[in-house]
Length: 322
Image 1 (tube, one colour):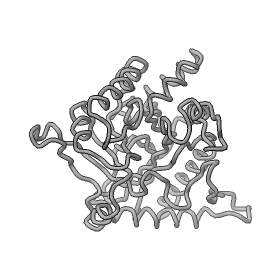
Image 2 (cartoon, rainbow, N blue to C red; image 1 turned 180 degrees about the horizontal axis):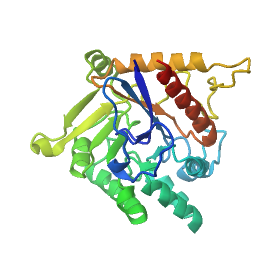
Image 3 (cartoon, rainbow, N blue to C red; image 1 turned 135 degrees about the horizontal axis):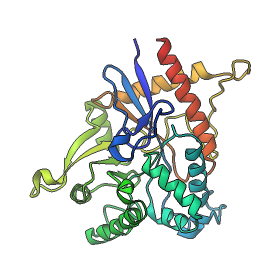
Image 4 (cartoon, helix red, strand yellow; image 1 turned 180 degrees about the vertical axis):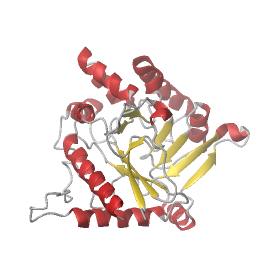
């Protein structure tokens, strides 16, 4: 009996393909692969978190300057991800911060821009959040939040049309969350919201009660109009321990050559399944979102995708044998 199904997802709401598609999908929910009953559906979500200013200025982050402060160059991240997505139609990626994307976009040739539009139209590159930045929720006035969402979403709409419309809020790094933002996202037509940081006591209680996913009512006076599905990510927004395949990480890669003395596929698959099963105990459904990425990762996207491809292939083979 099969006990799991690994899905290569582009977003938190099942844009998933377990293998190369027989036909190219459409954007939006039409590109979704439906989860299956009776198995644990593991949704692999490749992503990068690119702060629009933190330890360096926006341009220093974009161009990769002052790497003695932090090794980060967003232009290389987007370059690398687009290249890897274009080479394999089974791969998926989400991108969040419109400030960096717009800066990169206007530097590209018409040929590159056409490729990116194709990736978006086929549901292989999805925009999540989509605001100019991932805004703070405690000190930011609501009007400023609306303005910066307007700026980012206008760019996506102008550039990619309906296929560029984000449907999921992605507030994975703010230090605290507000009902007002949940209400604003619901009012803007978002279907879901995912959080990374919450109080550790709240998180422990939710994990024990399997309430890491819930419907959040942002405004009692608005009622259901302000309701939004909300999920709390298990690892904040990091990969599972031991499964970071970025150039900035030192975790063990997937070695699938049986003749190699470092062959480790069976052990690594077993480790991943064990971690996934433990994670799933905190959720009430048979769908598990596993984030694969971190701060300013995917500057060499081939490292991530090559290992994820091997992990998915090995998991599918293992599933077929059970």
